[in-house]
Image 1 (cartoon, rainbow over the protein chains, first blue to last red):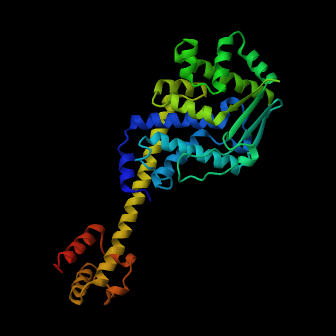
Image 2 (cartoon, one colour; image 1 turned 135 degrees about the vertical axis):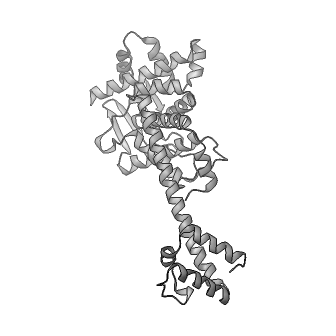
Image 3 (cartoon, rainbow over the protein chains, first blue to last red; image 1 turned 90 degrees about the horizontal axis):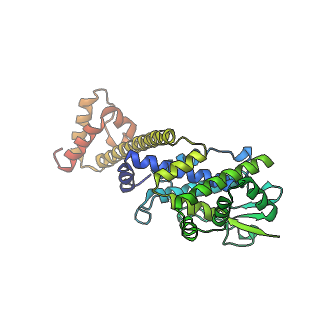
Length: 203
Length: 131
């Protein structure tokens, strides 16, 4: 059962804030399920992103996933951790430990470490050869060329998308290219859309 | 052959934190994912209200259960004279009451005789030694 202080804190969150929290979590859940467009979801794991968000909120309200509001005063951060953990558990239970997303691309997917201490942390180091990169997508040259082609004439967006894929934060890319950060987000959106279409065609 | 290794989990986390507390950007990305943000937030808020309601009912139920368990314990631990007074009060409420011994009474029996506010009233009286 949830403790009364945590429940009071949850009750004090207004509807507007809950609306934004819910949307952020659904977006995160959707990204996590779709892997930036590189993973084609199979029937067995095609659970709606909203499902994981609702379960995360339920578990927090019930106190099953205890919200340490002193350590994580922002409830969105706590819930994001719960969503992450639920999706990882779901992948494992649906035997989706390794998924091949296309003939040229090897996708390896594993349960990530969860920032909430209450959640289970599985060590998957043996399966991926490293314990530092729990979820890796290896993209070879041919696949990169296909992605580039799919971008068409918009080569700048392709370069920005690749920079982002390689781990550069959007703000750093914006500074390096001397363009507004919103353009980086547009390139990321386009990249995810393009990649998803490309891999959907392959399936 | 060129190969890039992408840490998808890290990317997702970074994008989450970059968009955190930026509702307009979140809405843009949601539209890209095929969502209608206004509908999504309405459905989200109504789900959260339902979850909160369900939880409040569960807490209330537990509090009531705890209250009856506490009452039984207090009744049983009372002095003989107080026990007599309690039994007499309960018999006023439920003339057909068969019990002559409070220890034999369980929470369900008590729940049929007294509502929560009456029960609280009796507990307060016992604590103030008015019974």
